[in-house]
Image 1 (cartoon, one colour):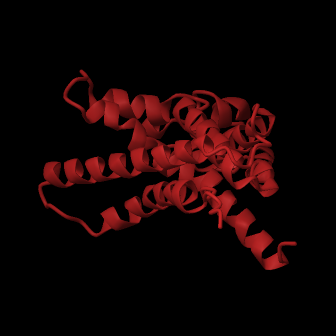
Image 2 (cartoon, one colour):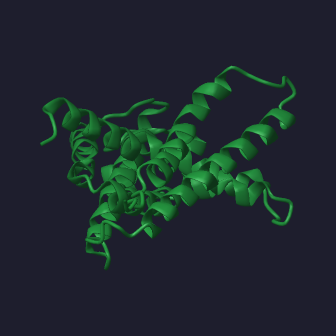
Length: 230
């Protein structure tokens, strides 16, 4: 049986991935399509899709995929409950009409707009310096998608096959893609920056680097080894 300390640490790790790992890593992977020369794009389009659309579809899709991959490989039940804490935070914020960074009395829920619009609709947009959906609503969506992906993995045919190496291969490939996206994004950002390397790159890089390394670890190190016959 797992020790209580290990159970708590495992849950906290999944909680961090659900609330912050997905929101910080999804943009790095998604930005590849906007930095390759084969695509016609603009930075405005990228940031609009990523942070201006209600319900944050990029983060939700990425959360479903990540939850499915780790749900099939780690088989840890605590991943199914990481949505509970973000939901409690969201419910409190909606009930108390909490505003993380008030910019105007008319931007507050219940004043110039409904609480639903502020937390779930078009009422609170980063372009208008309102960050409530990014800091309160999006972590709930990403955590819920993460748990839902893990729940779907448990219903996928072949889940009970502990010797199936394809699920570990999929995790390793996903980890390699995230790390490659991180390196490409880092190189391009440094080249485009007039000041060159900045120390804040390390802070922004820590989360996607950790998520990619975790998937590689799960896919390569935890993969079932063939049993040698004497």
